[in-house]
Length: 370
Ligand code: MRU
Image 1 (cartoon, rainbow, N blue to C red):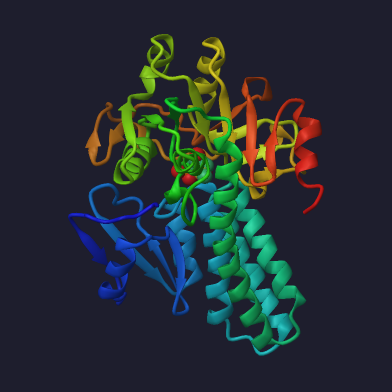
Image 2: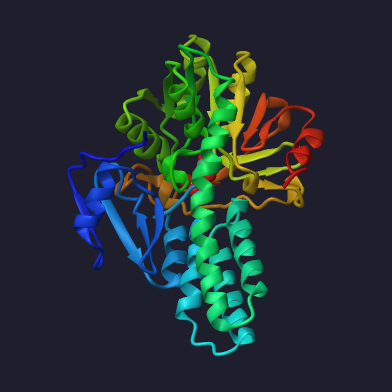
């Protein structure tokens, strides 16, 4: 179970129904959800101190939410993009199919330009545009787009659960598993990719402990992963990113699992900055390093050298939250992602099975029956 309750503060922005949402908190909660022709999201910038829901009725607000990390994590932004197009069909004043498709293309471009590295965003947008183009009338396209976006969100949860089961066989009773960034329920609609595998491992009756890296600069590890796992009763320990080598050298961890923002067909994995360091350290210490990601994260077209690494603002590095921790005017390099080469990866866990080296052969095979 991935239940969410016991927050000190629950705030609902806009006119969202508090009673209804509190009921949801005590059962299961979605990171992003379509409700009454609006999109409701957990504002992840406020976690772990407050659980704040934001409600949007304009695709431009969704673009802002993706850009400012209100919603983040590859699968979650894929579904958010799709929901953005759902809002765009409702906002459009088009009276013909051609006009509506034109409006949708403009919305798609705005949503697409928010973040460049996670391929799930482009995947989600393209999938919805295909559905839109298959409709005949404005009314039909509206219905088709909204129901396809809602289905994408439902499918995300099912895919994560299947991926979790596929990955759980790679983990043993009493393993201590290191994870980096947040590839959990908060990075998806629910359940998670890497943390989904950890959840499924526990559901299969095995007892596991987790070491979560803090994940500077904006601390998805401490703010989201440690929070999410602790909330669900896991034995989770937080370490600074600089203690990855120490933890491995001292036998504190025996497996690693992370998510991914984009995997290319050669098996190069793009994920949160620092993943490459964790994978290199794991190799050095003979510790298996796994990646869990749905097929929507795999990009068979782009070459590793052509993947754009998002560069984020320097203030994420020169301070922690609102507190300044570096001198004024300092030069900063702040890449949000890095690339882990295939030789460091023990297996790529997907909803279609686990791909292993040589990845150029095993990755395309995952798509054979899709
Ligand atoms: O910048 P973020 O927080 O969107 O980065 C997220 C990650 O790098 C995750 O590890 C990745 O999206 C996998 S999430 C299932």
